[in-house]
Picture 1: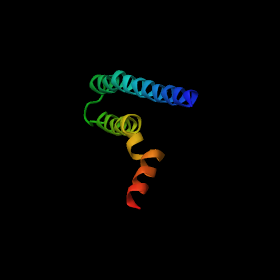
Picture 2: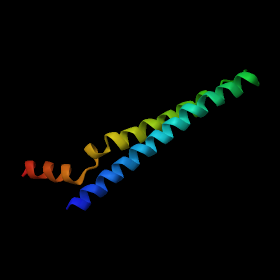
Picture 3: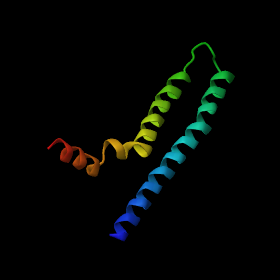
Picture 4: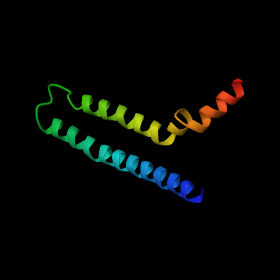
Length: 85
């Protein structure tokens, strides 16, 4: 039982680290897109599209890592089913 809990803790830590890496890369590369846009042709505001798209991806990644266990948890679903009966 203890090794199962340890595995769950390790998996949760991996997911959190994965999110932190994803968010850090987003924070580092988004300004690069905007700088490239600023230094080149500024007639079309193209960096807004990758920023919005990637931002939506970051939001869903965050929801999955920090709130996914509330929505997609087997134990929570079992508890809901017990209370319905």
